[in-house]
Image (cartoon, rainbow over the protein chains, first blue to last red):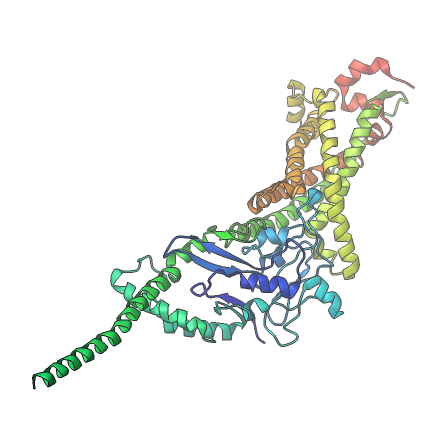
Length: 214
Length: 329
């Protein structure tokens, strides 16, 4: 069985927030709820700025599921973590446990009135028989229609990948092989001056590559 | 001849000019290409090792999202909170509550009820005023409600959820959370009133020290002397003051998330709240036992306000000596 995953290739993400808009539009989320966001580190620092798109990562060992007092989360056959809004009491524990800030609440009121938690469903809807109700509560169920999450489908640079983890990994591996691993991918050594011409060429190739389909 | 020569010269010059003109754009383009590469390199620097190092340490950046903590890429504290809650608080609380119940049961089976040593005289002494009793039962009933709803939030998914249909389960949990959140502040007010009302009786003295040495009557022969409140009651009072107020204050922080508390703050106060309230519950089991099953004649004091003369003489002899003239039959 396929295990669905997101992967954001931070070397391609240009912080256009297209994924955020696509998600909001596909799922018609409540006011104030943004299931996906783009975080930019070292914003504005030339040569250091990196952006990455984040939403629910559908963890294999999901912290939200582990701390939920009503056990409203459940894993699907595709390895997605979905939740039942009928059982959600809005305690906020999932938000306090989630590393990615994925759970969102429509309110943040006195006496802990938060409303029902909302988060990325990988465009897979939720536990509701009636498709109309399902769409109202959980947003689009594109997976049922054989489509991938809209955020990834609409990503203009194909930075955000979604789908079967093995396929996503293959695409990313191919990219890494093509770009070169730059020796220092995990080391502390900074780019050396001699390398920079090659790196610039790689980056230019990458920019071209980004305009082509994957 | 010279004419042809000049024509050939002009031709050569023209060709040279053409060649130069044709080469020029190529050079310009080549220069532009180099700039574009440099720009691309600058705008897409590649994911540096520092990026991942910072990300796994919980670095913050900039985002368009307004939800609290959205600018943090990975909130690393969540995993620690999960571990403390699920692997320490939950089992620890169960052990504390279970251990307390077990100890009380064993004590009841081995030692049994503390009976009145002398038959009732029928003369009653007022021990708790109407105000005392109102505050006590206000706090006590809220305590029980908050304990049941709070324990539901911590444990019910292990034993209630499997036996209830989802709709009933969801309704109960929603009710539990709302009851807990709305009654919590009232409990806080009650505890505050209780502390203010009873503070004056609860300073420790030498009598209490001797009372503790005799284990409240368990160790050695004869019942130790005690004033209006004995050492054990005073300990329970100070537990309410310190542990109870911890529960109340941490609860208020959790109950009003509208002041922009960060996730890290909420994690900390959830741990404090759960830990201190479980401790208070484990201790309350003892208090409830002593006040009802464990001591003959004690419960009527908090129920009617009056205790029997022989009960007062047995358990609070110094107080009895002070108030024995105020008995009513």
